[in-house]
Length: 391
Ligand SMILES: Cc1ncc(COP(=O)(O)O)c(C=O)c1O
Image (cartoon, rainbow, N blue to C red; front, side, top):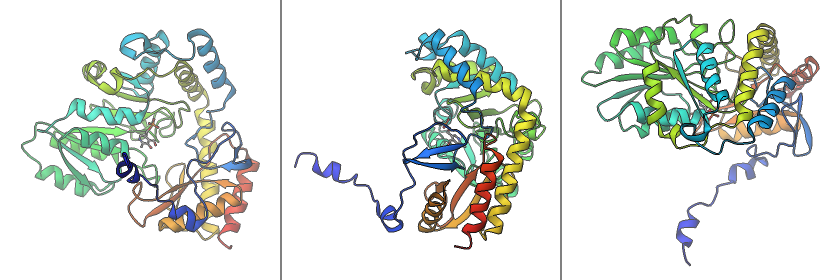
């Protein structure tokens, strides 16, 4: 039959969902990120979003988004280089640069696009990229597309990284790429030491701070503030769809580089600009962080601790938490699905990670309790988790 062979290659293997009786992916969410989330007609405690500071459904953020729609419309229907570069966009670039303490910023439709487009615009066959083996898919795909030499280093392992740097000579440029907070583990990169190694070996650091921006540092400025890194000479990327509670991605760094990328990074140049509602929402979130970060972070940390202790009490094997991310070591993909299903049935929504998102047999079930959840909701979740281990 016409094209039959082609389409028959794409039959989805649903055996895991059939064996476990549960498919945790593409659930139908029927509400905004309120205290409880409406999923498949049931109200669930949401421990699955990256809404760290709980600002996604904040009234002030919604108001700013609505006002931007009233002023600029729903979309700019153009790329930033054409009709997408409104005054709000330009102002936000400046505010984001000031926020992370770097010279210049460009805003893309997503951080996946930022990470995906960055490397082919700055690296090529004569270059080497040394990368932490646990980094996000967007970085991996972006690095592969650059066509340069790639060497992975063991997760957060400075000795291994230095060994590779020592042995790597003859390249036009060496880059060292990592994340601030690793999203499945909650581990934090020893980034100050990585920057020092880069200085020693003349390499350029690239950090993805998607899970650090708005969370790390004494005023929420992210990994550079957290580690006390001043005068950072490398490249910085981050998602605006996590603590910053909108969507979009940013690339920040030295002025000359960002100005160049604004003309030569196709993922920006040829893609419709972020919508006004998102741009205004980000601006509102930055203002809230300026005044309320201390309070929000305190709640986030306290909730993380309650969830962590409840998981331990429930008998779960948990990654030692250093950030708002709690991660159950669930092992096989079957077990990962089963734990997620049991939690779902008890009214808690979590995020399961199976291969290829994590190494084979190292499944994780992630729980993030955003600062918007009420103390009663956290107490309810804690009671379920403590009880769950005994089931
Ligand atoms: C570490 C990291 N980088 C990049 C991204 C992609 O960000 P965005 O959702 O803005 O495309 C994610 C999102 O999952 C992430 O966790």
